[in-house]
Length: 320
Image 1 (cartoon, helix red, strand yellow):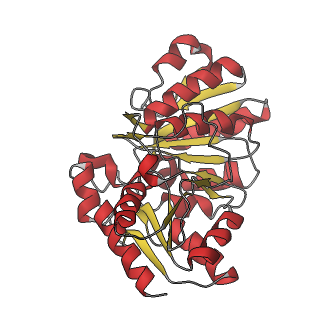
Image 2 (cartoon, one colour):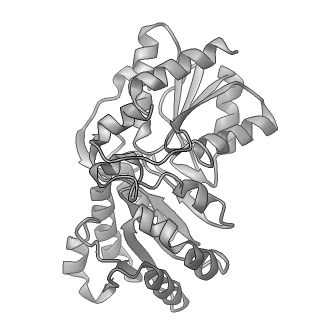
């Protein structure tokens, strides 16, 4: 597909995709249960709660207890989805996730909304930018960062059938929704090829995939051939897709709404270093906390918007 052919279907919150997905998979799988730490509204759980009140647990502001309860539920064959903000899903309960979920390989789905800078006005204390790194370092933990409403819905449903602990990360604001409505372009562990190109590879995840597409369009208007790849599954990483792309373009840009230390960029660089060393430029926050502000303005201030991706691509091409 050409980047110019990609159009926005609508703008929807990725957390809304989670809400629809959990409701649908709840209808299909009676073992799916949902726990929340006082954030049912923010995670769009209303329809699930209405139809399956006996499969919903309101834990309250007690995230550590929520993880422990979820781990215990798996022993009886349940598939628990824990829900709260990304900061509270990881930073606040890392010990419980490590000891009670990851260490014993419990089938818990940790669903984390309001991730990254685009949380916006709530500021640095809520804008976790370290969670991908925290979670991907846990042995056996699968890490998924879908790019839009449709893909978040597809991922929410897919992880119910995926055995083992999963971290599913999504966001707060309305965002361009452009992937297939039926979710057919989402497979856990398989990168989504958005476009094919020969001059530069742009690897992105989450909200940054759309910014990468927009950057690609601008670069193509300048005569630069751009390969955009959506790395929605950070772990297990689709190393074959990465190697195939970088051996063709011989340079790359990574784009993530996360600290450049420990996130997608580090994962891509590790693959390149082991298999086909190339110049790489990183788009992400640079070892810093965020701040309160409007989501799009924060992306611009911290260098995560489309112009910064364009500049990074031009710079990395010059380094070949």
